[in-house]
Length: 259
Image 1 (tube, helix red, strand yellow):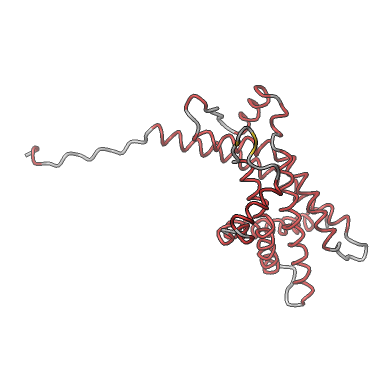
Image 2 (cartoon, one colour):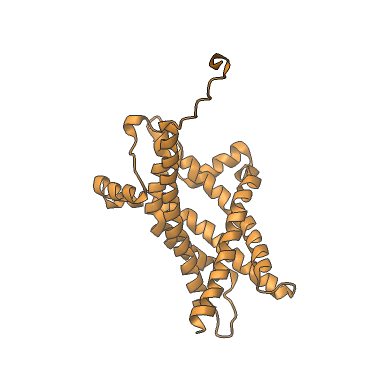
């Protein structure tokens, strides 16, 4: 009899909240992709062009200090170009944590850029540009220069050819150098962004004060607290960036310049 049959299991329903979360994540993804498309392509393109310009007629690459200077120039320019996308990214990822009546509700990165320009003025797109450029100067001086120097040293050793293995090893070394150089800068940036107002005055006067107070209170090596997980994130990113860059440069020279 039908009374002994088990009731049919109810089909799980997707809640409006989960749909909203999904599309919110996709919206944030669009901003992240635009940031990479503006910041990363600009810095790598400028570095490659300047590196080739500074290479001697005999093929001798520029020295390490010049490589670092080229990296700083590329990083600062890339950060300036990528700041609008970063402003949109920060707002879109923070939107879900705001009270419902304070959420901006940007549908995608282009909607965010258009509304910010219309509602707050175009200069708002470059809010926080200076500290972003300062961090990019340090990170790119370390990352780009150390990669070029490591690659050159590996090739000069005679044990490596100009292939993916060489690019992989050089980029892993670059990731270590970049992690060591950028972690103190990130600590300063994060603490200044999150600082409180005490008796109407900011908690820190400048980045140097942040570093001195952290060292006094937590020790010198606290500037590299969490080094392993940071490198675990930055290492693969650096490897993929330079391997793809090298392959694309090689394809461009083979199929475009050599024709």
